Image (cartoon, rainbow, N blue to C red):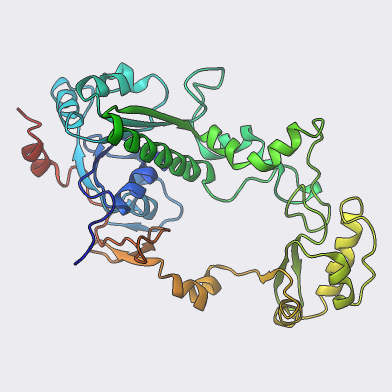
Amino acid sequence: MTTPPLLDGLLVIDMAQFLSGPSAALRLADLGARVIKVERPGTGDICRTLYLSDTEVGGDSTLFHAINRNKEYLALDYRDEADRRALLRLAAQADVVIQNFRPGVADRLGVGPAALRAVNPRLVVGTISGYGEDGPWVGLPGQDLLAQSLSGVTWLGGSADDGPVPVGLSVGDMLAGHVLVEGILAALVRRGITGQGALVETSLLEALVDFQFEVLTTHMNDGGRLPSRAAERGAHAYLAAPYGIYRTADGWLALAMIPLDRLGPLLGLDLSGDPFVERDRLKALIAGRLVTGTTEGWLALLRAQDLWCAPVLGWPQLLASEGFIRLDMVQRVGADALATTAAPVRIDGARPLSARGAAAVDAHGAALRQEFGLDT
């Protein structure tokens, strides 16, 4: 007997665009929820034309396909009275609605959290903004690089002379999506007990601040002392030598928290000194030694002593590695058999999988209108 997915029977309305909100809806879909993506007629989600490269599938960007697989598609124009009533009728039958409009926009269109919960008090509405619902930044574009730049996170990567270094991913969007899912699931647990719905709110900035909670807590309780990035092999502003990535004769090697009194004899180096105060000098010594040997040679030496190290892999090496293959995290979706990642969780030993890919704007519109009575 096959166990039903954890969120089987849950109806989620994805009213969001771009990355953060749709990624949250995707997580719920992977856990078994039925997700209906509502887009503007004609053009649909702007993410359809947001390209990471010139690669597309069926006229839409691969980015859109990655984040919007495993959903059904309905087109509604919230400025149209009949479509707005249809959206409210759909919300009245839903369990969760996800939005990521700029603050105030959904309310002006008559489809904000208050309007949705008025027709369904049990509804859980999840919203993601750029910087919260008020304050001087509320009107700024909720874009990942801009949020990273405001959050302080760009001063934690790289080395001392690099200037601010952004994370090379839409990390604020992805983190905000995960945070929203946590809040939505908690609200659903409470609803199961009390019958009461909820409004769950987060923002790119809040997610990025939380991302830094460990080092930011250190800063706020250390007299306001600023983090100091290493001039040599920078990897973490607060961690001492040898923490960092080093070039070898044929590649790169990552060293984590290794006691210098154990590392020094293995490398034939005198690494005496304060690993924080003399971090740059010590890391320069280590770098000069590691470049004389191969990555595999150093791995064999260090791992034999149970010291924390790893090779630095690119995507081709990662995808070909036995460790990655054993995770079974690649799946094929849609008619074009698009290769994409699968859910990063296993339930009772099995990873949730779905072969359903993204679809065209309003691909399921006629069937959904009939099923939910949206045109009555």
